[in-house]
Image (tube, rainbow, N blue to C red; front, side):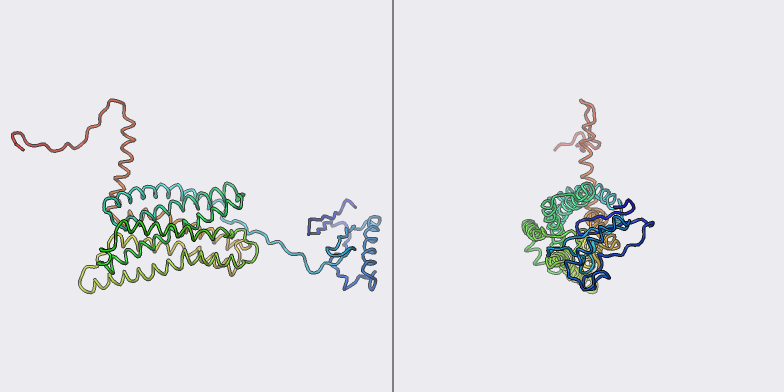
Length: 404
């Protein structure tokens, strides 16, 4: 073989590379035996293959490009016939966002996780003081947000995606899928419980006072958590959209549609109906001359459901677009859109603390108590031994000469 050319065989791909100084060689491997060749038209199939091999050997002495003849998969002889073109391997779409998602999720986890921990302690105090079911629902919602941040943001996006570069055993990835989807389902459907509780309190107050209790709220939360874990089990077979090179199978379509229905369409339908009924009830009170009092729990409910519907809408749209229009694996624009949609959806797990502080004065005061109680032991621990801290305000005593 001459130094100016080489013949490389990669499994199923035959690649010929040559320099510009050599004469152009006829692409014999693209010819079909049904069309024939100028030298072997009308000859038997085996004779054509032998002639082709002879021409390849003669090319060594004449300086032409030698050709390696490949055996046919289902025949004993040699063949130049290739039916159709080689299947093209789809190239993976580039990650246009670069390191921006990694920075974003790191900041989201660094700020959102401590905020949710403070929210958990604050809501636990309020729930123990007031015994209101709405605080138990908000506490469960915050706990599910913490699980979502740990399982999806930290383990899924940062650890598996950025640190390990998705080089994780398939069984571990599939098991993590169950936890991720179970956490999503729990977070959404606990918000549904909160919505139904506020609807019952405003539209059916007598029934709500008779039936509502902390014990019933805990039982409802336990049932939702168990159902969320059960509905997360089928997503063990969820196919990562970044690796989805083939057209979606029936199982892929069923799982993706189930994800969209369970996480978005059905809950948003319930939110729309119940919130519309709550707003209608408040307007009727205003028209009848009564003051349409909007409680803090109702305002928080409207804020939580609105933020959820807005922040999760891009992910659902991109998921359906990937399913029916263009694949994330092949189109960089869909890849970028899914990255942005996931970042918006995960933002929903970190904004509730700001919403609660904005709406509820009681929540803000309790947060200050929690921070003060956590900061006080640090101050006392840093003081020298033997130093006693006296209270700033002394209890009022009785005036002199006054008897009890």
